[in-house]
Length: 381
Picture 1 (cartoon, rainbow, N blue to C red):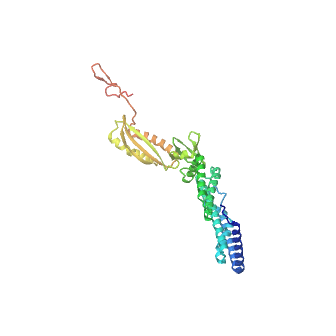
Picture 2 (cartoon, one colour):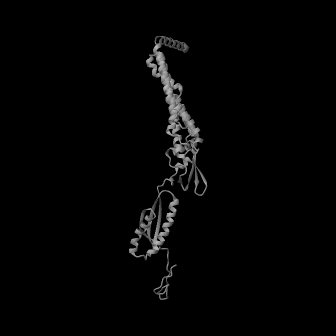
Picture 3 (cartoon, rainbow, N blue to C red):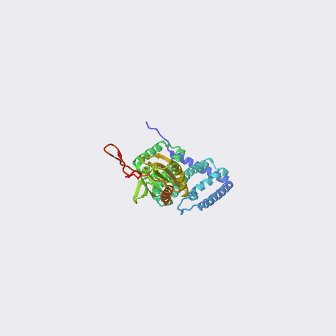
């Protein structure tokens, strides 16, 4: 059985005719209010344009480091003229007492315009924040520029897809199928480029979390080197032995990273063994002697005391902290301190121990034969 349906064209024609009829009657009856409303709208647009120009002066596109002033300027620059016109029309719409169909049309256009303009603003804020954090992390070394195209495409697709779904939902369209399709497509793309996206998001994480920056010396796994470039997929580290290590960002973040440059002090540890023949009263003075020498070098003494009874020595632990992270200061301090310890111990009559062994022989009757004359010094070897 055939079911007859009425074409939609006559209904649209009737609505269009009603719209123009009501609008014409409204214009003829309210021409004075309409003139005042148009003037107010023009004034509002002029004011908004002036504010936009003023905000654009805050934008410093040439700066290596993207600041929040630049982001505000970009938002103003990306504000469309048609959006300003729609805003002005929406503001004066109530004063002019527009007919219902015209009021609904202005409201509909305002909703669409606001949604798309909000998507443009959201894109600029996200991209500006990424560039801002990247500029702080890398001081504009150019590593981000190669990946900004991918980031811009992903952010643009995401924000405008959301805007399209919101507009279609306001129009009464069932967007469940569209959302499902976008979700399935996104999952398929994500699975196909899982490695690329994992490194990309790891690079973004490094830029935002900033565990290290270009120029820092870091310890990665069993390697150590200076960070030369932080890319969106890889990080380049110059090893202490001269090689350039190129490590994927995901693998880099999966390991323990030690930022050597960010250390606030350098700890030097010395184990000093003195002979067992050292008198107890001298042993009691050694911690104070060590502390005095460490403080004389401007270091903070973390430990200076008797540690243990060794196999052939009485062991003292001497630990000092040197403020800062410059080994160019720590190494000479260590060298001077070692020489000072030797000099001071020699002056105090304190002998540093080293492994010794004494051999004894016996006569046929079992009597020990001393390896040195009575009252002499043992032959140590």
